[in-house]
Length: 372
Ligand SMILES: Cc1ncc(COP(=O)(O)O)c(C=O)c1O
Image (cartoon, rainbow, N blue to C red):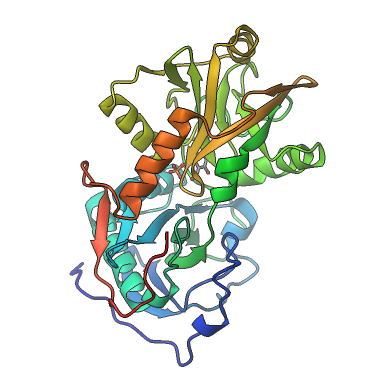
């Protein structure tokens, strides 16, 4: 496919003036335009940008019944210099490609998918630049989604699909940085199978499996779930939408990518920075017993999550088997804050982007300026 600018049907009336940028929340406001293309008769075709709108789907579409759907998520930031920056979209597109393969979606070659999604994202940002928030901590969340669109009740891969990209201005998670989050260790339900399941890809089933434990955690006064392995419920895996890190006696430990946890982009970025800084890092299994022991001996120095939504988020407490371990009384810890500052500094163009992580998109300078 020849990829230059995709054809655009602009909105007749922008909804931008209705947006309250002081109360964005997460993911309930969608920008004026979206991208879509379809898979029919064995080929991906008809890429276009058009107004954000409802989908017409038959109730018999198998995706609604059997969950053949994958997605990903990354963010664009309004830089201090007025230029927009997309943070590491290549990693998300590669992960989306893996997700498609695992869900038997006939996706194009990864290089073509990269070109299409990054070009579409650039075009959406250029077109909807006014939707890019202008406060530190806020950003434009980009959500690619692929769904099967064939109406059939047979359990098999669909013969038609739609790939969409929507964007959503989202608020700051800054309060989390000062308060930290509380986690409840889930030792009854499992997010994803330990071997051979869907845990390493971004598909609806994993999030559906997380809803009841998430609800129960909140009922018990915790913010999020800390998942354990599906075999023994003994080793730590990840949090609802974040990978997890423990700083124990000067070393940083995070669970390895073994197929059951999501290979997070922020996890990868944090590991890269920690290694740059010469901080000892171990990607290895970590049992709940080890975490409890480190807490009791005073060696557990910091716990933090890493993910696109919150970037780096301190963990203030962990509930496990009826006990609550107060791991931080005054978050964020020193290393948590250093990582947060470095990553957000790169994302907003305040610090040098030494690893070439940002994809830059020029936007009109007349827009509101970035406020720190
Ligand atoms: C289950 C899960 N783990 C980890 C992450 C963090 O991944 P990333 O850093 O790519 O956002 C996410 C968010 O996408 C997630 O949903």
